[in-house]
Length: 108
Image (tube, rainbow, N blue to C red):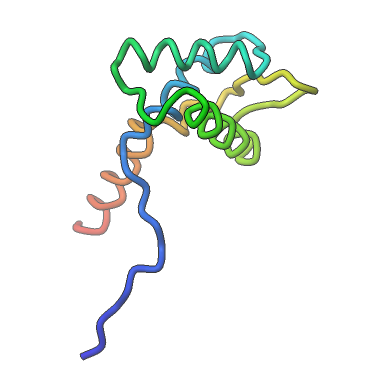
């Protein structure tokens, strides 16, 4: 019997940085990255979910923001970012609900 290796990285849920980006960008405002990061950083500090230092968090937040832009959930105009209608699809709650629905369909 051959053993199967998982070659795909499974995302840990919840992803606090992406969730805070979604929370801030769900408001109908436009943000430059620095002001967006300051809001995200303050919210994460309030939730006691900051780890790895501010500079590392800034890099992670920028990477996750670019991922949201690539997925079409955030609009980038120059150096300003604005969440689009489907931005809530990136939240951990939405992803967990989709996974639960898929598992329920498979077991039925």
